[in-house]
Length: 438
Image 1 (cartoon, rainbow, N blue to C red):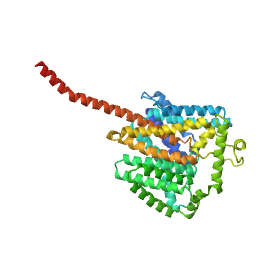
Image 2 (cartoon, rainbow, N blue to C red; image 1 turned 90 degrees about the vertical axis):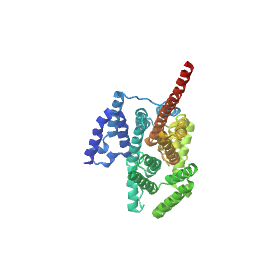
Image 3 (cartoon, rainbow, N blue to C red; image 1 turned 90 degrees about the horizontal axis):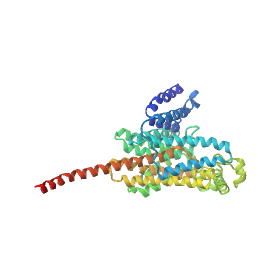
């Protein structure tokens, strides 16, 4: 029954996508983040729904007469250069066949995100996409939070199988990135029960983060808390909420959770931590030896024998920074860091230019919460392989769209202001002319 319902929903959406291509971005995002087909047991479990939607989206985009433009900024230039560089490094990859498979997967994700940049032009469309992302990833936070309450935190919370956030650590950081966006949506709704519902979703997602038993997420919470304290004016309120919330959660979670988190201080005796350090050293060595790095999926026994201090301890990068470094060399890492920096600067620009303008308060607020999400990604990503995860790239696209809308709105407001000024001056000029005539 689930297979049939899901199939009807997806194929039923195709005519709407053909009519309005932007709907395809929403449907694809839902399929990508929530992976609803993984909740089925029959033919739908492995059916390529996302590919079907992507093909229809491409057709709809080509047929659409609406304006389709890609904002040309420093961010998009470095973004395109990074994609091209990934293709170049694949030509010289240590594992060329495996690298090509991963490149195709990454390019598919990037293509849809560029569709997002081209097809979304309005505030309402931005908000709709945020609701889809929050609902899709937040589903697992709600589910995990309820599971944690029912089991008193005795078990770890995991993400959807076969996705970027299947692992408990990746899910935890994704939820931390999601929390600011949930609160942002709360500021955009007016119904009291909708606001209360979103607060409840935040609490359940926060509980899921703790119940993931992720030490990296625990450190990320500390970084996010410090950032909030530095940026907010209500430091006493934030400190009080952090203290009360932390005390309640830590009191609720079982002893095995405390034992797990306490191993942060003993990383030299922790096999997982030492494995990551070994993988990070591998990435530095391969980047120093090869201009193009090892290429996608080079992390293998054969390559670790050459470049890793401990050749038998084969690990993935477990870091967005060392992952990109090992995959694409120092040039790739520089391009990636420039993208992060320019995305942050885009948020700064929006906040600076939208500040104090009532019509753009929604944009100002989004830029603020976007930056908090970026703090979560940059801090949590230091310990996780999420460099190619579509969520942060989607956020980069959204902040670019918000900047473009802000620029257009500012220009409209300037024109209105100029018109009012000229209108107010007209009677005086006419009176002067009349007096001169007399």
